[in-house]
Length: 231
Length: 231
DNA sequence: ACAAAAGTGTTGAGAGTACACCCATGC
DNA sequence: GCATGGGTGTACTCTCAACACTTTTGT
Image 1 (cartoon, rainbow over the protein chains, first blue to last red):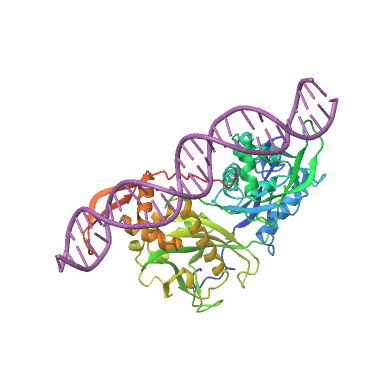
Image 2: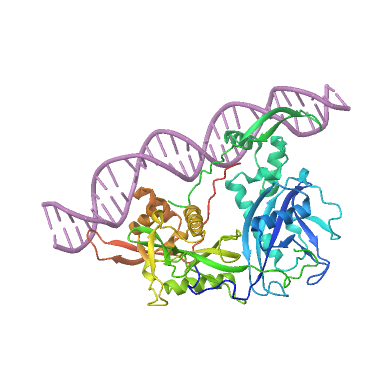
């Protein structure tokens, strides 16, 4: 660890915060939740939600707290992303921020009415406004990681409601991967993975033939059959 | 970001350190560099090298500094791993540590003679001694990430000397993946990736037929042909 | 000439991809 | 009965995995 004579109480200490990139599928697009800052620095600019880390609080706890403050949601997928600590990223003092990203199903969100006066809004990822601090870099990083993880894990389901049709699932994948998928191949592959179970119910609204509703099997182990670069 | 009225100078601040898991191939095994702690807490226990983060120093800078202190090596592969910050992980005070891992080719290491009195040694990853703090968890995490990254990137070359034979390369992969590989398939695949160039030289020592020496092409873009989980 | 390591091709199985039509329901 | 979205199978291509012998050098 540190030099033998290191006394961790002795040095100048940076501030530590967490910031959370909150993704959801809203109106057939992948969007990120932003907050409008009211006071300097970067007053009136958009930023991702965050919080300082309390002195006796785990990092993940702080992230979950920031998330719940903005969306009213608990128990959603949260993952540590990266720690950004370049000196000067906050003009006031040295601030190191541990960035997280969260995936929230849209139907779970109920914005806490008037939690504080600040304005929040969802923005489609490719069309973000200018962001405070180094938050553009953080969102960019989170977006790359999300697309990446979709390819070899089943995190995608965290963006969907509890039950869904295969067409809804396919649409979600198409939005996030920005790519059209073949219906037959999609269905064959997703069913072969044995990570879904039929609910027995059918979706009765909308036009056309009612679609079977599925649920993500919580006991599902999504094995990644890696194709190695080599050998 | 944080609450609008947040003044980052106002709160109790944790200490922030970096810790570095240093991997190298030593004596045909994947090993990690450890330091014996001399003072409490955890006196006489082994730990991974680290350092506090200076108030005007970037995180990566601090990691590179810790790495150079122990190995005398600069300009090697370094990657941020994860930030560990559970309250209580250091018994003295709240310490948040940003963990890095580094890949060092064995021939580059020249331990700085007597940099300070502490003892250092290489340990094979599956046979580590008891470690201080939560360092066992950190090494475990780093090892998992390394094996994982080997599969879809070309980081493996960072553990090898500048020039090497295909057999040496294959042996390195076998050690880290803990798996025997087929010589013909290995060679076909690695050459097809077009990330190596012949040096024109041959390795002349050792017995048997001299082997062609290769170099990793710095301009190589190792494309990851992902096999998606679905669709 | 023999020991030691380097180098080299082919075949069969499984996965991926492309592609078009019939089915159930509401109006 | 027609409009709307739901649901289904097959053939071709490509990648992966298994497998054994010849070549070059030093002694």
